[in-house]
Every structure is written in C-alpha cells, then in structure tokens.
Image (cartoon, rainbow, N blue to C red; front, top):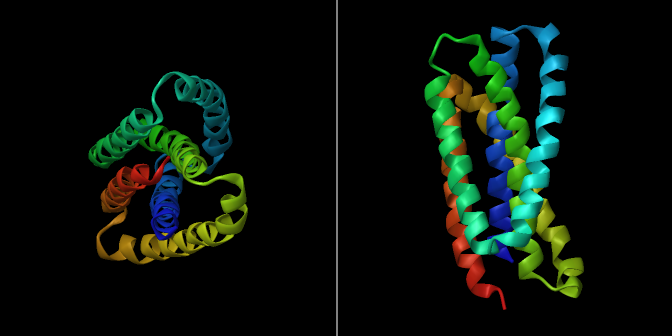
Length: 180
C-alpha cells in the first residue's frame, strides 16, 4: 500500500513539475493566441494514442508494456530537455503536446498497475489513501516547479521529472512481485 501511495505521489509530482514548464514555453515562444490551436492538436493526437495504448494492453504482457512505456516516457522527456535549448519555436508547441499526452499516459500506467494489485474489496478500502498520494504529489510538484525554476532553471525541471518517473519504474518493478 505504501509503495502504491509513493508510486501515485511520484506520477503526479512528475506531471506537475513539467506542466508549468510547457505552459510558460508555449506562451513565451508562440504566444497566447496559439494555445487554443495547440489544444486542438492535442485532442486530435490523443484519440489515436489512447486507442493504440488500449489495444496494446490487450496484446502485450502488462509487465512488458508498463516497462516499455516508462522507458519511452523517460526517454522522450530527456529528449525534450535537450530540444528546449534549441532556438526553434516549434519545440515549445511539440513539448506542450507531449505534456498533454504524458499526463494521460502516466496516470493510465498507474491505474493499470493498481488494478492488478488490488481486488475490488481492497481497492474500495485503500484507494482513498492511495489517492491522497496524488493530491500530495500535485502540491509537491507545483512547489518544486515554483522553487526549482528559480534555482535550477525551468528546462532542468524536465530531468527532475524524468528522475521521478525512473523512481516510479523502480517501484512498479517491486509492486509486480505482489501481483497474484
């Protein structure tokens, strides 16, 4: 239960660390008038991505799918850390879209693992406590983003988020040992 709490805490922390970075980059590099159009692109991309992921859940062993997904999310986050330094405005838009996809994907990964760990009766009893890890993660992630942007710079917050996701992956590997 505590590992699942920590897993959800880190998932939400990692998102709330990168969310303000994506918003500030898109506003600085592309302006506020482009945001509705980028949100539309997010919606267009999200449907096929969620559909593909749902099909993969049925076809790929969950342990492998979750591991590959975490590896991919971490790799793309680190890639954007490198790309943000480039002077191309499209990077901000692409990163904004990535963060929207990232938010859905990592939360889905959490629930995919959590649903395998707990039976319905256990879930009803424990998910309130586990969910509070997400609330605390939102507070921690927002606080880290606020303070971290001043200390290490906004772009380096992506590495912190990738580190949180690596910790999630480590936790998941230990949680799989509890699955019947």
